[in-house]
Each structure stands twice: as C-alpha cells, then as structure tokens.
Picture 1 (cartoon, helix red, strand yellow):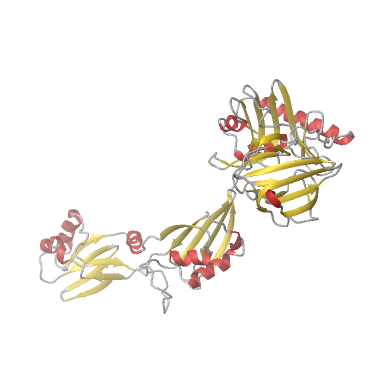
Picture 2 (cartoon, helix red, strand yellow):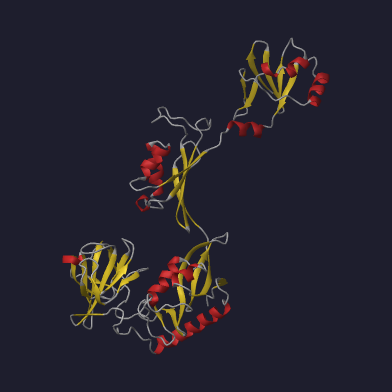
Length: 485
C-alpha cells in the first residue's frame, strides 16, 4: 500500500494496482463524477506514486468497481478512481525516441551532419570514434542516407548533463545506422548502464546467388533490346566490352539481330535483386552468324572471354576504347566541322557525355600525356608489333597518367572532354601502324591468346557445364540455382 498526500483533505492510496482517492467530507457519487477536480496519478520507475493536482482529467473506475467500494468501503472514506496496470503506466512515462534521416552532400563531414541533426559535439565524437572500429568515416560518400535515433528530451530515463553543450529539441544521440553497400549494414548504438558508451557493429545481409538468362531480338539498338528484358546496366557494359574487339556496334548491329546473356544475380531475403556478379556467357547473332563467348580462367590466372574454339576475344587493341559512345565521325576525308573545308580525318570520333572514362586500347607505354596543339589534352601510347594509339580532346588525365608510365589494356587513362579544336564532348581516337594512321574500325588486329593442352581441356569442360545451364534457362530472365560442383 502506498499513500501520497495531495494537500488539503485529499490523499492517494494504492492497493493492488487500484488507486483510491481519500476524502473525509464529499459523498462517494460526487467524488467519482467530479473529475475536473481530481488529481492525476502516475507510477514511477520504482513503483512510487506521483500525484499532480493540476491535471483536469483522470480515468474513473467502472460502475461495478464503484458499487463494490460503496458497499465494502463506505466507512473507510476511500474511493476508487482508476485501475491502471503498472506496465501501462510505465509506457505512458517513456516518450518515444526521435528518428531522423540525413543525407550526405558534397562538403559534409560526419561530425557536421551529426551536430546539425541535434547531437552534441561530444556525442558525435563518441559515435564517430566507435564507428572507426568497423568502418572508416573517410569512405562515406555523397548521397548516402544515415538514420539517426535520439532520445526524447523529456525522457526521464536519460541522465541529464550538468551543463548542456547547446540548446536542442532532442535528447542524447542513441544510434546511427547506414548501408554502404547492398550486403553491408553499419550500426553504432549506446550501451546500457550507468557508464553508457558507443559501440559499433557490422551486419552482413544474406544474399542468395542464382543464375539469370536474358535474350531478345534487336529492333533498333542492343542497349534498348537489353533494357526491354531488364538486363542490368553493368552486365550490359561487360557484354559490350567483351565484344568490343570484334564488333563495330555502330555498323554491324542491324534490325533482326539478337543477343543472349547469362550472368550471376544476387537476391536479398525478400527476393529483390541486390546486385549482379560476373557475366558467364554471351551470344550475339549478327546477320545469321553466332558469336559466342565463355568466361574462363586459364592457368595463367588472368580471366578472359573465349570463343567456342578457345580463342581469346581480346585482341592487341580495342576498337572502341570508351563505353556507351556513339560513332560521330569516321576515318577518311570529310568537311571539317570547325575549319569548314574538306580534310583527311585520320581517326574516328566517339561522342559521349563529358567525363566518360577513356581506356587504354592495349598494353603499352605512354609516349606523351599533355596539352598538344588543336588536340587539346592528348595521350599517345606505344604498343608492341609496331602499333600506337592516340586519344585527343580529353577533359583531363586519370591519376598517375604521365610520360613513360606503363599501362594495361582497359586501364582508365582519361575522360571525355572538349579541349582543343572541338565542337562538343567526344573522343578522337587514332590507331597508327609503323608510324602511319590506319582506320581503327577496319585494321586487322593481332589475335589474343589461344588455349592449348590442359587449359583447352579444362575450358571444354567448363563450356559444357555452361551450355547445360543455358539449356535449363531457356526462358528469358529465368532464374535457377548455380551448380557448384
């Protein structure tokens, strides 16, 4: 039993979860109905009764409870005014946490974001320090959403500091969570207890890998045909790169051609596509001829795509050293778009958005990487067997690109721009053989690696497995589990 004095002739009595209102002069019926003068009762964390005489409303006991009390307690001067379970009272006393979502913008630091959201600098410092145990704050990039949880400022369970660092509309920072990748969730939260601190944890989302197959007829472009059957963009890029040594996507793709692709797809627990993996197989049917490529790693350790005979798709040079570009000007005589007269165009032009990566067409050594006359920012690379390639009008050079630097085929060397004598962002690309410019789209390039002996035997086994998988995936975009044996 707890008795709490309210002042005057009123007091509170708690018996077994039922609260009683003590009055020595007012009739029972009048006390029960006179709610405007009733005192409210709250249950503290330790089970104590807290009375507030200013409250103008209180829950009244049911008529049955009142009737019983009138019979049994008429002489005791106690009246029941409410029956509230202890749990409900505790819930009422604990306000909900405050949730906020912030998005990282250019120039933001994690410290500035947390403080702007309502955290004190000491809270932000503690959370960031804990975060470094599992994730570097320097890796946080613009566009990342960060979920923040703050205590409610009126939460009685929160220990108040002696001196607040700043006025704010939230309580202390309790948690921070973000997802840097589809498979990874990073969370920072406070520990319970008197000496609460921040701790960080990394949660790996379970993903299921399955095989996906897509196929479609080409009516206007390969990209549109792939988009119409939901081929992920990164898989489309991998396919274009694999075929870029043999196929001129501007001239050789015609209406009625078709494509097929098999790739790894990773799904989350809800069945949603989270990300893609490798492209295992591709096929282009161009004017009735099938060009098939299989992904394979020979004993050299360098993974590549090979045709059905074990010949590498790679050539000494790439015909198209930029992704998703449009052929805007061919090799040969043309009317110069700036000078206005007919002049020999000793390369090909690929129109692409400013900043699109440009790749080294083959392994080699950089002969020059600087500003060069009307070519603007310019790179020239020497390859083996008498070949050289040149890249002009670049916006800028990739990090580390300089004279005498050795580069690998497919390495980013710069970005599409419009420097020098240019009418718009594009790549001017030249191929030279023994010092003379030749048509990059027509020159016969040295073949790549051809598998032999043990590698060829192993390749044939892998090819048979992939062909069987394709047979089981004959419906476009069908999904099947990958054989792991």
